[in-house]
Image 1 (spheres, rainbow, N blue to C red):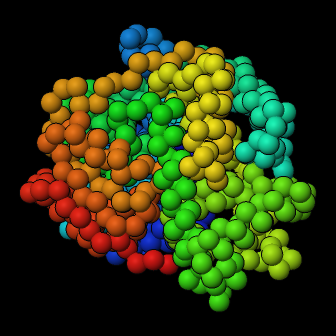
Image 2: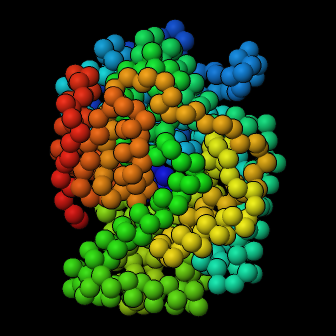
Image 3: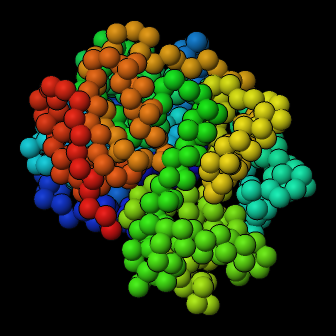
Amino acid sequence: MTRPASPLLRRGAAVTSALALVALAGPQAAHAAPAAAHTGPAALHWSTCPAGSQAPRGTYCATLKVPLDYARPGGRQITLTLSMIGDLNAPRTLVVNPGGPGEPGIGTEKLVWASLPEKVGAAYNVVSFDPRGVGASTPVSCGDTTKLIKHPATPATPVNAAQEQARRTVARKVAGQCSAHAEDLLPYMTTANAARDMDRIRGAFHRDKLDYLGYSYGTRLGATYATLFPAHTGRMILDSVVDPTVSTYGAQFEQDPALQHRADQFFAWAADKDATYHLGTSRAKVSATWDAVRRNLAAHPAGRRAGSAELDDLLASAMYTDQFWSDVAQNVSDYRRGDASGLLGATDQLASGAVDPARLAYNCVDDAWPRDWAAWHRDTAAAARKAPLFAWLNTWYSAPCAYWKAPATKPVKIGSVKVPPILLLQAEDDPATPVVGARRMQKALSASRLVVAGGGNHGQYLFDGNACMDRAGNGYLLTGKLPAANATCPASPAP
């Protein structure tokens, strides 16, 4: 899947910082009980969070040992690092996952808890964790990959066989380097194992059932948990829902036209604000301006490091939330006036995450990928006819999976057993998890209810300012009762 994969922690530093300020200053912050947080269940010992983790002030961390290989539960153990906020004696525990795969969870618990209405926050303590392979848990490493990916990068859409081969060479080297550094871990970085880890977390909190909130990839993790552990599944919200019927390889081709559609919406939005950004007075004119900027950057990279591929990456990242549309439009407007500083700053920020070892580890092992590059080329070229801005870019994000050393596993068939009722939340024009996937998830989880909001922002509940969607989530967490039927909500206001 294209990045950023998490609607919360990868929306960008500005959004994360704003949410962190809410967490520190929110009305519930005074209700936290640090002394109680140090006592905890017998299996968990709470203390300060590890240096370098994404834990904000006021959260506490604990570690939990889990089997690397659940087929050999008495074999090698790895470490999960958990983080918690709220009253340890609260009636319920809400486990949250921000998406990914491969995103750190530590810090998400405070963003969620501080955003809950007081009545809901009083009913729950909130727990998150760095999943296996990630961050402060036993991490997957690919070593130093900075020398593998240079900027300006080869254009994402190849104009000849040499450019495509150059990109393939980078993908092969990334896969080889990840294997060299984490060969012993890679076969066990699966969503099914992460779900089994969550059941260990449930047990460590002495809860009969797991209450859960998952965004984006976190919906696949939650639905997998519910299928493996239906008797232990409590109140579960899946927000921005992954399609359970297609492979990860197939999912990227669902994303491509959805991203292109979202870009058209962005171009139309910029056209309405031509007096500010001067990119064109119609969607078609803004699109033409964008194409001209891409061509110019391909020929003359800004600052010798921001070419057409970097602009494509910036656009893809901004499609996840319209909160960043103004920044992207301004950066391109400034570049056209001779000031490339904003464009270069965004390029440098995105370049720092060019290789995400944990994301690749999960994606490449969770299910099968074509090993014949001819299939990738054929499918991507076909997708590019409808999604010229994103098809090749999306393929390159996942291309190391064509050369991955660890064997793929057979994923859990979501909904293959009777699963308790679940609340599904989705935006109609979400480009990262298109609405078709949410409808298929509801079909797989037949007792669930689906609430669809207008707009296309990825990650609705608590973080999109949509009062209608928040009411649906809050009511369910308080009562455990789903809406009587599927429902719709209006979109949150445009920026």
